[in-house]
Length: 90
Image 1 (cartoon, rainbow, N blue to C red):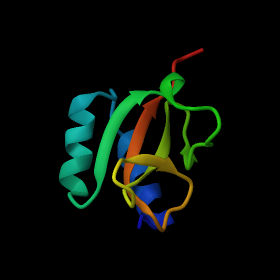
Image 2 (image 1 turned 60 degrees about the horizontal axis):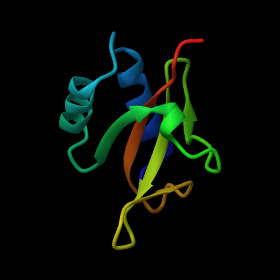
Image 3 (image 1 turned 135 degrees about the horizontal axis):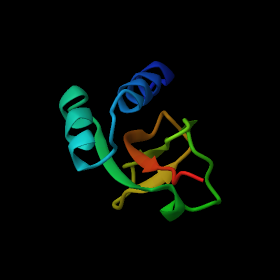
């Protein structure tokens, strides 16, 4: 489960980073070791599921781990991780 306050803290931490990359993920993983994190481009995310939280430079999506395979979810009660999806500058 990821409570809204935690998701907001993750977003604030990521927003304070000058660059979003694999090193950014390491910082997030060290700060929240109980959660899984992954990094990608927002264009790689499916349009059918809205972001759990949006910022100018990135969007956050929730990862569900209740099945055998990881999947995206919009339910924070089943979330075990976060996708940090970088938004291309327009």
